[in-house]
Image (cartoon, rainbow, N blue to C red; front, side, top):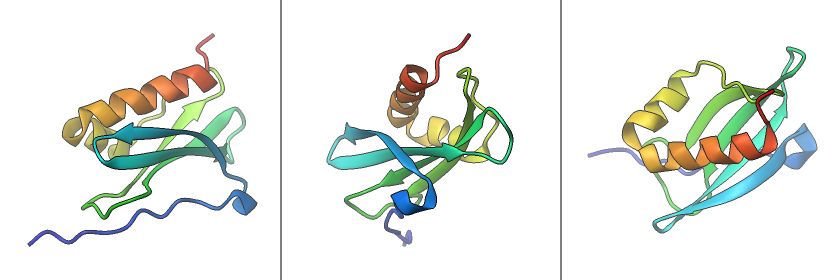
Length: 99
């Protein structure tokens, strides 16, 4: 039996900003960012908000210029939930434009 976990959306008091909510099937996924320790980069967190999942939180990074950093979590999302990955990439492209 697969263990299911609830998403853990970050708190705004910790410096996180909610960029958007993605509605996919019967789930809502929050897309959050906060400045990373490296100048010009942001930490990205994607978190399920309604139901429990085997993997309810995904982590990644994006530069201010729109380049996505390498992330095992984002690769896992792309492999197992391509539609969610495509929508997260679209949200990041709107907020962080490539120059």
